Image (cartoon, rainbow, N blue to C red; front, side, top):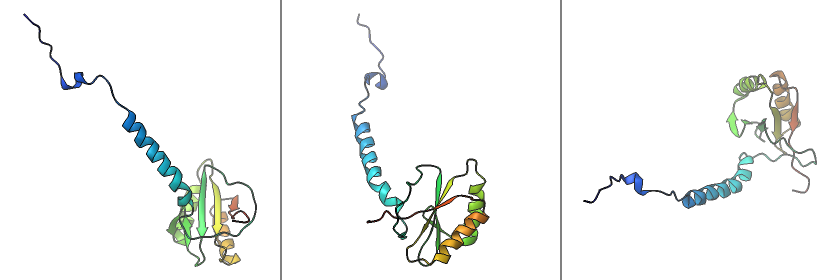
Length: 136
């Protein structure tokens, strides 16, 4: 008499092919590598040209003011009152993130200074002005 084995559908799978998973992972990696540099300049702000130090790679906040005087916090438009409240929250974090200020080249000097004054009143002691490298 022959013995019958009870095989479940999962018992038939003894290997998992990860090639499609790796293909998808590399495709996503390439897509993000291409789109991330474009996402940094999502708002229409062109800072003045000047050679300076490299930007921090982590734990930073970007605040921008465009040529019309609109404020952006991490590329999201925000009112001056909401910006002040959000900057107070962020300055209370430990460790305090670096504050990067990007002002449009056509923005008046007073507009950028007002943004720096707002940041200082919210608790940020160190703010860096972001510029474009000369020749770009």
